[in-house]
Length: 568
Ligand code: PPS
Image (cartoon, rainbow, N blue to C red; front, side, top):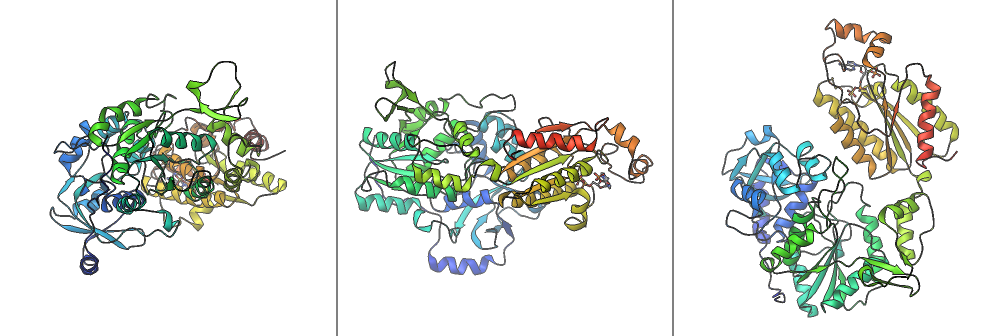
């Protein structure tokens, strides 16, 4: 395996003078406001992290990548890096036209010459790239429910890097890392990719990996976009900094990578390897279930546990970066040290805490032993993830109009206020429509916007330790899921289906709306002339026929107690 030459790799930026000029000219161009994921992709395109790509993929390259992980010229590249946009925007463009790419504040980062515009077959992309057209996969969900319908492709001219105000000193472009390795004389470097906090087992395995291949070690965590629900990168970086002291400083370094992960398992591992190669790294640690997306909608793993290692092994020669197998490290009590699980004789006491068990201990405020993690790391985690009974959460009622959502939500609010301890906010359908969404009607687009607004407010309340109770109809499963993901990062999301049948709601007709809907005087009325996706896996489903409101609210209280969110 060759050691890295560490010569600079090509970037897509123009010179400082040209950039100033281009920036002025680009102000007159049609512009596209990049999504957070597109900003991450653009950063790595421009700084050479995605070398040899010269821009967002055109149609031929895209087809090659989707079909067989190769660009049209045969170069290995496993992940489609595409610029997805809405149909209306795409229609305004001519091929050959330059457009300005802006960040979310409107700063122009680059221009794109649009050479290709096409409507991709997203189901095919999902099958080929992510292994299944199943929305339980975060990237497939993104593809179908967030990404625009049309892809634009073409070369990018870089004007400036996206600005980061956090951990600036810890962020390096591929060429900055290459220069660092050159300066330090590091010719062999093994990189460790992670989206989780590091505990003692990780410290041990990374240190061993470096010793095994006699290389220096680069801790290279992802701080762009990771899996929904992951610990935020601010907390993680503080944890990494705490662990860094545990390594010999002359052999180990850390740098943050602003990558938007796709959780694509085997393909993702190869992609990660190519990105690290661009950063001047010679060896890459690939673990069990590398970049795994979790379970599919049948409750099974998307990929086999060693598929990522197998695919990497097939391509490593061509990639020019060597894989180091991740060793599963466990703690041997008798010897008070970590050892690879496959090297341990029978009869000794092996201790291990899984990720699930760690989350349980954190959420219940239980002790986390020192053999498992470093006290400074645990302290940081506890700050971000206080025990569940101290976290904010969202109760999200959904059901037909007149099902009893508001009444139960009101009763629940009062009960929670009686208990005290956390502020409670009720986002009832009618209140929201008056105060936040007064201009909206009941088309799918407007309902989605309404629910997303509720989700946004609920996630802010949850983040700040409060209780949000929402009670809209929320008829669409995908929108409810988007809200769940938004809230999940900060605290629990409890979906409660108020399962009153449409017949019963119509019989009650408390507001007289069903009558009007039947007469056609109200259009798009949920359950009558508009769809309602029944929740398949709500945390709780309550029946209201022959059950009084107090009892329904009490069922929610019991659920909250069983989840550790409130203490009796
Ligand atoms: S949604 O779909 O979640 O955005 O709806 P939501 O904000 O909860 O608003 C539902 C309330 O608006 C009244 N209303 C209608 N509901 C459904 N379909 C149509 N077309 C409609 N037009 C008006 C209705 O009173 C709902 O109130 P609730 O509290 O659910 O009975």
